[in-house]
Length: 326
Ligand code: ES4
Ligand code: ZN
Image (cartoon, rainbow, N blue to C red; front, side):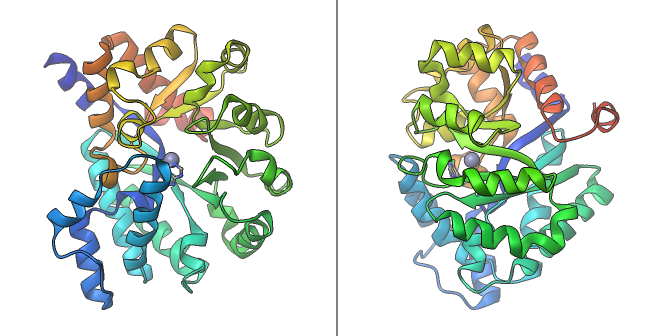
């Protein structure tokens, strides 16, 4: 359709992408082979068949298992560069990518192997594809705050190349308040702050992310829509929400894309962006997310332009850098 073609060519930023979640089944087999790692699947088809999730934890169990094939700096470079090639094909001009260092350091992969590999892939993407990027270190919320502090410490030599910190993994039972001290430290260090909130967790977790973590950007935020005062506050504070429609569908955060909260978010003046989250697991990259949502809820061309503009406005870039990307 016309709108689909328009979406394809529209310059956009991707602000919610877990690089480990861009590991395609074909790459999983290739990395497993070159590293001599065994995986519990016989074929790419078998892997894809396993990607039927009923909630966030279902997905996380498979996602952490898949990450075990990533061992060397070259693996992290190749993973990142392959993502940027797909992003460039979707007219993504800038991407802010999450990584989960604890998933790797807890298996004996040094922080520097992960960070240097990703940073090399990012530098190559800027040089060869013209896609700029920033790196965001996520703390795993199912682990304790001391482990997050240890991770921040391990990251110290790289902090000039890391724009901010995030909070991901199992949300329910691990409220933002659990990480208040480490987020305060990160803020003091000059890092930007974001957190997954209101994906499965209640509006109270969204409030904690705002009041206790003092986040600069909110990942997901869907369940904010259950709380009128919270909606008004997010609009007044011009908080950017990094929404992920195909992720929400695959993890049963919504039962049908037709019921997705984005139209209501836009009506209420929220600064919505659209993103792919874990594209290899959820069935689509950023344009697939724009297109599937636009078709399901009937987004207009103006809505789509608004969302793409929000993606640059919400990026952790200076005004001059933002202007250069548009
Ligand atoms: C994630 Cl969709 C999602 N939610 C929370 N944590 C995550 N880590 C990777 N993808
Ligand atoms: Zn996410």
